[in-house]
Structures are given as structure tokens and as C-alpha cells.
Amino acid sequence: MSQEWNIRSRGHVCSICQKPLVDKTPVVSALRETSDGYERQDCHPECWKAEQRDWEPFSQWDGVYLAPVKEEKKEPLKKEDASELIRKLITLDDPAMRNVIYVLAVMLERSKILVERDSKPQGDGTIRRVYEDRKNGDTFVILDPRIRLENLAEVQSQVVALLSGTKTLGEVAAAEDAEAAEGEGANATVCD
Image 1 (cartoon, rainbow, N blue to C red):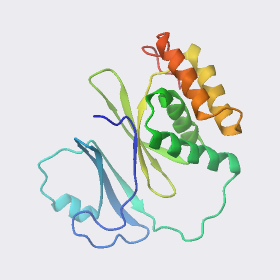
Image 2: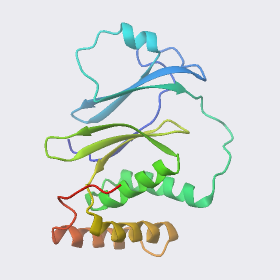
Image 3: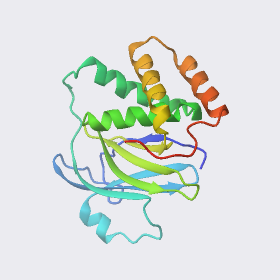
Image 4: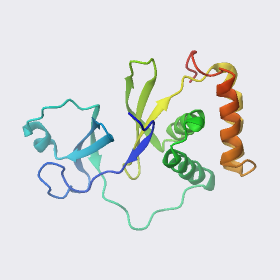
């Protein structure tokens, strides 16, 4: 698969029957792996159970559909910046930013903005983690780069520099490229 990360927004109609999803009712969400990336489906539970499928979901979870809120309450600036930054980095699809993206995802998970829905070990030893934004239902498939403990402080300082505006994406990407060239951060224990 060419994409390491991507974002899939929550649907507002059932992917099977095409009827609107109703606010605060159960919904089944599933990711289907395709040659172009991941396809997200959000369905009424009864439609999901009745549907005949010739494919297995990459990831599947039960949730509650929350209709979009027209006027959103502002959260603290730092949280919005981290959420905006991870979206920007994922959209750039730069492999040099994989450590930063993963640390941001963990940070947002600990801040209760993202929730990990699934994790899938891959044949190459990596792990793809499926996160969902609690507020708007967007899904993120993020590669766990298995950051070495001795490299974590550097990645954390890069995240802080990006959030504070003291470093640009180009400067952080250059540092990540240099680290990858030295062979650091490739194979080791995951730190939590």
C-alpha cells in the first residue's frame, strides 16, 4: 500500500441502505483495505448484520453516531494546534514525519481527543493503529514506527518545536531524514 497514513471522515448515511444515520444511535464502523488505501463504512447495526460480504474488514468497531455540531466550543489553543498539526502532517504523506505523527497521535489519545479503535501487526513487523477522533468521527490509520526509548526525547522536542512554531516542517523533516540515515529508530522496543 502506498499510503502510510490517511484520514477517513465519518459517514452521515448508512453505507448499505443509504438512509441517514440518526444522532445518538448505534453505528457499526469498518475499514476495508483496498489497493488505493482504506475505505470507511458506517452502517446501521441491522444493515451490517444482514449484509453479505465477500471481504473481511481491516478493522471494525461499534460506536454511537453523533451528528455534526454547527457551533463548536473552542478548546484550549495547544490541543487545537496538535489536532491541526497531525492532520497537516498526515496530508503531506512524508515518511520522514512518521515519528512525529505517531507521538502526536499518542499525545492526542492521552488528551482524550483520539481513541485507538484497533491495531494490526503487519508482515514487515510494523503495526498500523486505527484512531478515531472522538468529536467528529474522522479515522486515522497511523504507522507505529516503534520508536526507541533513547530517540523519544528528540522526537518529543521536534513535536514541541512544531507546536510552538520555533521549527518549520522542513527543519523537522530534515532532522528525521538524518536520523533515519544513521539507522536509528528502525528496530527496537516500543515506548509508551
